Amino acid sequence: MICRKCLQTVPDGPFCCQCGTKQEVPQRSPRRRGNGTGTAFRRGKTWTAQVTKYTYVDEDETGLQHRVRRYQTKGGFPTKKAALDYIDTLKGGHSRKVPTLLELYQLWEKNDLPKLSPDRQTAYKKARQRLEPVIGRKIDTLTTSDLQDCVSSRAKSHYTARDMKTLLSHLYRRALADQFVTVNLSQFIVLPELEEKEAEPFTAQEVDAMWSAFADGNIFVGYLLLMIYSGMMPGELFACRKDMINLDRCEIYGCGKKTKFRKSSTIVFAECVRPVVEELMQSVSGDLLQPKHETQWYDRYHETVKAIGVRDLPPYSCRHTTGTEAARQNLNAPVIQKILRHAKITTSQRYIHIGSDEAHTGINTFSAKQKAPEAQAASQG
Image (cartoon, rainbow, N blue to C red; front, side, top):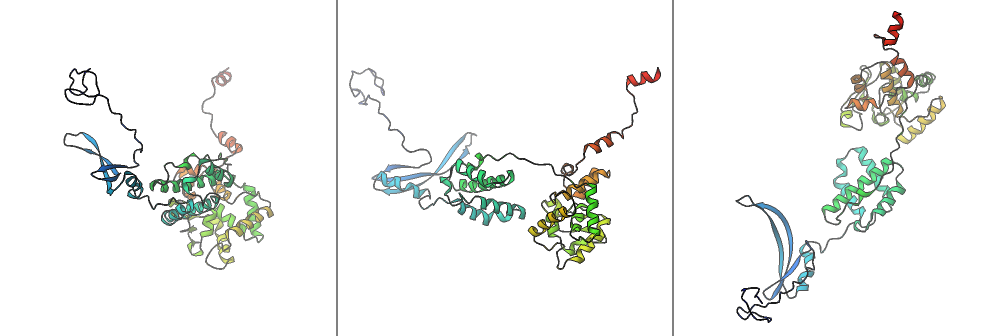
């Protein structure tokens, strides 16, 4: 046989008679600890615990890249078991307690939630309430089924389910950063289909009915007329103070909502509605143009439209009426965009609702400069 070290021919046996090397290849013991879990090794008469602190890629003088590892160690243990038991402490995980969703939310609410807009803050606070069935669970005990069941049973629409999913994603990202979990389970939540109904504007006859009701002494209808003839949103109406209104210029300042562009824009209203605004200002006491609580206002709104014989459309239909009527008056797109205070014209187009009658009227205004070849031949014959 050939010695595996000195390559000399030697008689069969467990050792080489030339160099004394053991001929049987020793079997390595299998790895028992996975990567990143730390290890223990013997150093002199004691054992040392070791974990990888961090790694990075470095480049030497020749341009060759290589991975560099930095370790954290602790020695002096009498046995290997004692060294291995100390690894969790060495990694900083000995006193780490896996948090619940509620604990993660409280941290996120304190540090990140205040950076969002008031509307988003309200939406996420409501999403937190809908997470009540799982909010007390430790995050590492939750499954995808737990989260999906909670969202499916508690969310009433696509948007409320989306807010719950987004909030869970924020909490999971915080847990991932602290290595409490390894996967963001919120990404597997399936949202319900978005069933978005097209908004409807009020008709010209319905707007006339509003004017008649206001003339008969129904002051509340003035709020509807103001929104229709200015493009105001209900939230902007709730935030509007009397000192924000310039009656001479027919402008309102400082109560824009939702987008940064809209917050910095001036609301303009039609001159025909100026007496309505003035009467609204005189009819209420206090600083606000609309002093009622939002819930009370919405209740009064639905009662009023039913009483005057108008369809019970949502208040936001007033803004859609603004865009639609502006298009019917042949205002160009940039002017409509300015009235509705949109950053993009494409957004304003969603507020214009033209029916088939208007389409027929518009197409029939085209002039026939060229007749069809068959019609020309017939006329010449």
